[in-house]
Structure formats: C-alpha cells, structure tokens
Image (cartoon, rainbow, N blue to C red; front, side):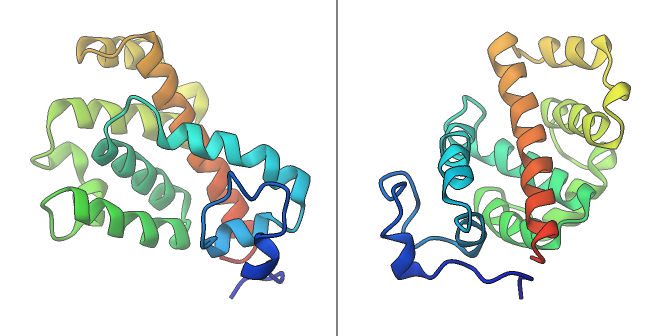
Length: 165
C-alpha cells in the first residue's frame, strides 16, 4: 500500500487533465494527481515516452531492466508482465539480468548496456556506447529517445518508491 492516499477514481474525472489522463487511472497516476499541476505537467512526457520510435517490445525491455536495476518492485512487476506478453520468454527478469550471456540479439544487448551505464553511473556513458548504438542503426533521434526512456524510467521509479509503491 502506498504511503499517501491516492486520488479516488471519481475525483480523477474531475481534474482539469481529464482528457490526457488514462481511464481508469492506475494507482501510480492517482498518487501523482495529489498535485494536479505537477500531474498535468507529467502527462505529456508519459504520453511521449509511449510514442517514441523505439519498438514496444524493446521499450518495455528497457523499462523493465531499468526498474529492476533501480530496485523498483512495483514497476518491475507491472512492466515485466507487459514484456512477457511481447516476447516469447518464460523468465524475462532472468533473461534481462543475464542479458550479455543470453540469446538476446546484439542490438538489444547494446541498448541494455547503454541503459546500465546510464543508471549505474551516468559518467560511465561514453562516446563508444553511443557509437555502438549507431552501429546498430540508431540515429540521433533514436538515441535521444532511448536516453529519455532510461531517464524517465529512473524518474518514475523514484516517484513510485518514494510514495511507497
């Protein structure tokens, strides 16, 4: 259970952000909606992350991986379920944990290596990490989108854990 009271579903419908908010609103959103202005500012980024040019399965793999590395059980659990629906793997958490030794394709390994460097210690990200992404067809737009997904996920992990999810 979260450490603060979430906004009730019926109250979510009354917010000024109603047209942008998901219905029914997940618990995470209902917690953020306690500050309507911040929630309103959060929604466009949430939407943009879902609409990047990164394929759904890879985006969910990155979100699950980052959440797992950050220790966010709530996000890891919810996104690993989504990932399982997108890839044909029984234990996606083990698969992601051991990505370098897994049967994962090289593009995904390079993406997760970039994500791992960025979340472990951002100073670990090097030009070589970006060059490896370019070798797998990533242009500036796709690299920027990947960077946003990793950073956004770390941000939402902190929101979730800080509110008791």
